[in-house]
Length: 218
Image (tube, rainbow, N blue to C red):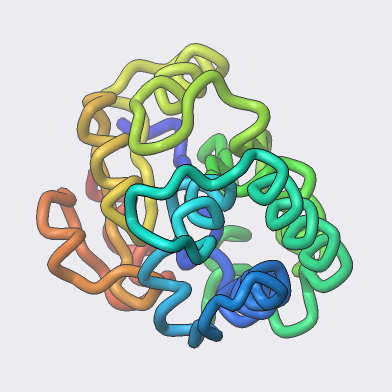
């Protein structure tokens, strides 16, 4: 019987793509980078913004070592811009608020590779924070997804077994983390990753409110 539901944030609870894209393009613009579309950004994000930005800084060749000061400048530009524009266009996906409100018999947590204070601010701005007992971000876990470590730590925090928890996410990072931790994984197709990245999930759904049928049967 399920007791704990663990949710990803970006691409699962909220569509944050445009605001992340705007911050990414702002951060990279002084360095001669191309301008990325929302679709391109959604296909790249997931493993943490520092790693992504580092990979996108233009260099003379693929083997160039990007100077640490340039990496820091790009990251600082991103964080400065994004912190001021977290909710410009970000919205909760259809059915999220109503579905979460119906899961009162479960403990609920957010596990994101976004920094915790940004995750909290977004959830508060979208009036979703009250539905969660725990919110964890990239800077408040020992390891980030796709590592199973943050999932296992949440199981310990809530004193549940791997048979009593499920992870709901939109990316291969979520699927890999959940499966490695030995818990059920429900993947959503409306998020940032295409369906081929989700094939190893236990269940695949097209709308968030489909959880109302899936969760009670796990």
